[in-house]
Length: 326
Image (tube, rainbow, N blue to C red; front, side, top):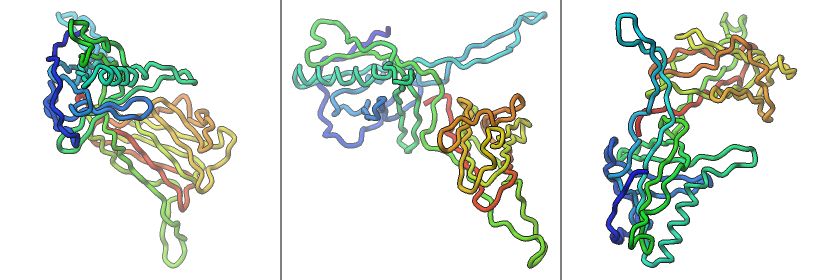
């Protein structure tokens, strides 16, 4: 576990207000906060809170770690065959203090609970991560989901643990990438259909909602969520750049065509298809050829196709850009 040192002094009372950005290794000036699994937000760079971050000891905010698989090359050296992003570990030293021993202990215990709560098992067998936020002076924010691993132990030195102490937390991130908490969304909707005969010859497609370009401003591939609103008899989404596609057939699960206002949601990571009542429609996918594709960094040419569409038919694509660093 990393060793930390800190003066056993009470920091000045700043009077609250907006925390001032502090310099962090690897990323520069920022304000940090932590949201525990209950949704409570804990400021990490506001000295008036009763604790603050020892920024010089922070690490793990840079690029994600990778495991490289290679094959020996006959002429010497090796050739890279496969790249696998690995879980990230973030070291976050905290200094906790109080005017009295009881005040210090109360703060210490509350913070320990806020972080270790991420390891508690929910009734469904899952665990809820906390969220570490890094906010920049320009207003942009990046999040990463964290689980407590170790380090909330104190220094164990003479004089510590009375009215102040410091701990070096290790936070484990199963997804090493940071993400923008603000959703990016793309909406496509069918307009009113027109008659071919009156008043003048026109054509209204009942199949194609549209071809468009979806831009991923992040550093790595994102896995979007799609919400389809009927009417529709067959749903097909195609990535024109890669040729990958998937089709959802509502009749394959015994439902029949989607009627006006009925919705189905397709999630690409983890893969799932859910009707609006929560029922599992994964069997409606065109297995085994279905590919629930992601959006690569940059421009992605995609086509949304709804057979049997009409007024009110719509597709909503949402995703959160992902980044290598905070």
